[in-house]
Length: 570
Image (cartoon, helix red, strand yellow):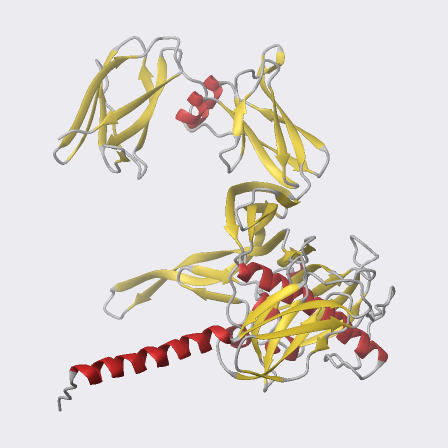
């Protein structure tokens, strides 16, 4: 059926539609609660307070932090019956009277200035491991600790999701040899972000069902609890809480232990939330994986998260890491024989198992925090240290400075050339263990194995380290798997490119009187020939399908290594 309106009726109908849409738009924009949070005794407004908008079923509908000036704005986006709950570290939670939200609403909240009393010395109480605010004295203290920790967790989650700050941070992955107590490898990456949780987790329901480790054909994945998990009913329902003894690193801290309430069926976590008794502020979270099949020591595997409050009242994570075992998977070969004398051999992969001989530690450290409004002023900066690295080369007369060597921070783009004394300084280095190495362009060309030195940087201190640079002739002998490099031969290495892209599986051949070795390039286009004669004319040819490149060269007898780049052409 088609409905036809005359022109006048169309205009009136359009006007009514515009009016209805305008009212709907104004209504949608109106459901915002503005207000201030201040001290009840006139001490001024309170920044960094957590403001929760709760609906009639006491579920959190929206949340926000008060600004530097103690103001807040919580958007509901709908009508309803709500009330506010305001939480601030060191004070009891305060709730507003319930109200019907129909339009823009202003609510001012005065916090009750009664500090939560936390004990300086605590003992464990195993009679009741659940969180209750009004049972035994220890139960009440446990609940008070959790209330303070939960406030800090909420404030941190809100700070990250509002993206009001810019974070410059260093992400890192370190590989440790547990038996040798040594750092074996490291990868570093500087990045900048606005908020965002630094790690990803499964949902609380998935963790309850599947645990903190999953596995498939690609390997094993470990998860750390994010803020939504720590604040979920699952975490408080499925874990027992106890007051903890002093922190080994800082005995003044008071802790709240948590552990699985029942024997776990899968990988779970236990750990401690550490708070400062005076300020009631959450300082750190330590957790360990439990019920890891095949892991020799659960205490090695877990994570550590630090917390800090900015002067604006917002909360950040200055440092975090997760310690994981290395998954290994052995091949499986099964042989079946029949009465006819035939055999069937089935090759496959076995089950994944955990290897704690090597531990992977992934994490990050915040270097600086800036406001997200474009201001470049730093409002928080992590204390740094420095490192002075000295490179040397062994010789017949002893160790000599490797002046001009390139000293770099392993796993990163940071480095520079050593001065005449073989030294290079690295400034504003975040605290932690690092690997340093010394090289030259020719060492890199032949992919010589480099010796690394571990240096531990501490805030406000200058660390020193020595790195050894092997003579090029000895390094060439190692990569060519010979006792020593012949005086009349050298190493020829380089890459094959097509345009700007490296080309894999390109046939590279050398020809000289008395020799014609051939090889294929790697996936990165790299090739390397050992035992190439010096002082002879050499024809170099690279080819694949209808692409080819040729050149000639003569290596000087004084050269140990020569680099070459080949560009394929149709």
